[in-house]
Image (cartoon, rainbow, N blue to C red; front, side, top):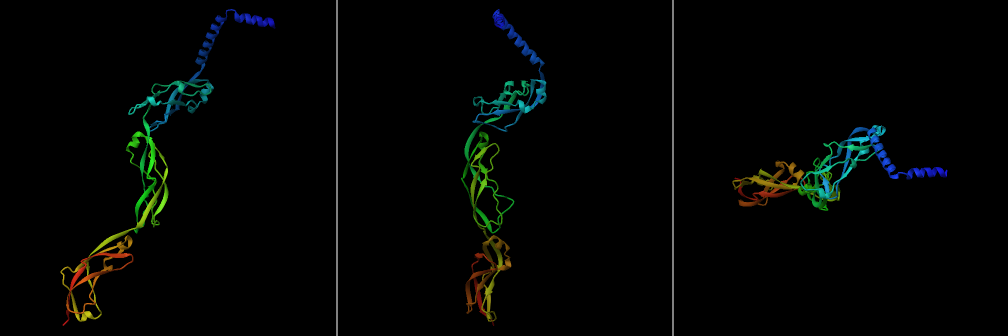
Length: 326
């Protein structure tokens, strides 16, 4: 056995470097032959993940998929899935130039190998990715409450002051979007006829596309108050309020040429709008005027209905002439 080892050792030692060079070229030839014997295949829709630095954001953020040429064992090529070869490329912040598209060039080394299958070629038409990049910025933007337009309060109530807590939200996103962003809206706040008093609610915010907001929801306080309106009734006839039987002994005559009255009613909206002209009755009280003569009398008004007030009467006084009947 020792003699065998001596012969092997002597064989290796003799012309050692010549044998090493021959072995090197043999391995190279073997690798080339193996490569030539591998099959090739075109693989479509291979995904490419673009990794951006935290200071940048992609507008549109397209999902890149490319067509590549791959080589490998026949069995591996037959079973390959485009996701198995997916690529991952990084963009450096120092390569970013504001206002210009950012171009990223793909190489076979950017793609994964799977079961002996590797990407060997990328068509020139798909080897360059074009990105629309912008700086990622953060600023505070005011919150705008938004209400559900499909429903509304009862006519007798109205919305007054609305407050958001906090009043502003922090928005992070592309510089161009944030430059023109004036406000961030809430999700629609429901208001219907069941709401008759002020309330407080928690509402989510609607983040503009491509942005991140913090916090994502806010407290909204809504003041609800009764809705009062004024309504004017014009050219109403003036009635006389006299003692029973006095009209048989006295004549009552308006001296002023304008014998019609305008009355303004103030009250809750539903009651005020439902009021009819014949339910508004201006009058003068002459029951205490017992002697003939000309008197200046204040005008009063009767209104049919609840929660209604007389706001104004024009004119508020009128002259009345009283004479004895003959």
